Length: 274
Image: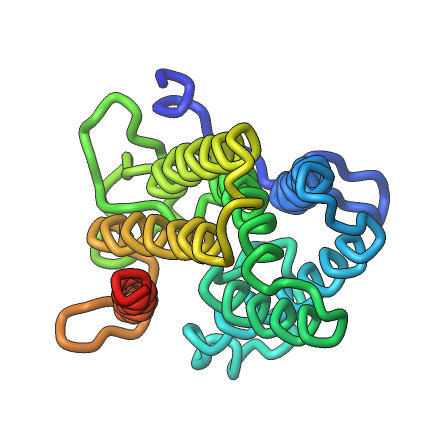
């Protein structure tokens, strides 16, 4: 962790004339490509049409990026109202995962209905890839020097250049790498979800039951990520709207947790009746 404590990254990977390639963009694209390969491999085990899934992943990418950017812009609307052209500068960071999830779920629902494919099976296939893409993409925040946390004296605290610091912490030099905490958390969620899939496939549970196993797997991602995000928001210091002492992403996380847990309760109650 010593390199984190001493190294100040450059956001630009390569610059040749007018062509500029950013670490953030490379990591986002890498996360999407690696996750796509894993989802397609996983789908083969469930006999899901590969071509259909590729079509779905394309629309999820479009809706997810658009939703994530729109959500981020709304959170920092005063800034973007004053700098409207910055709305399109995605390479500088600014993709809110909650917006991506909401838009992605909408696209997934429409696609499943149109193609008459099980919505919960598709979502169960997608969530491990989503968690992995988040784990990889979050590292891009390090190179942009954004989404860090409170000042810290811990040995893995990262130095932040003064122009990227947030008031009232201008005099602090080292900060919590909250994006790294989230990246590690998402990686653990990915491993757990893949373990669930491995167990389902090995024991052929999908042939012995209905949608419930896929519902549980999909909602597990929503609950686990929302818990992770809710906790990390206590140490994040990037500006965001607040309500009743909670940051807006915490409120959204609580809503997602409540809806997911309630749905699981309804499923369990229905199971007990049968």
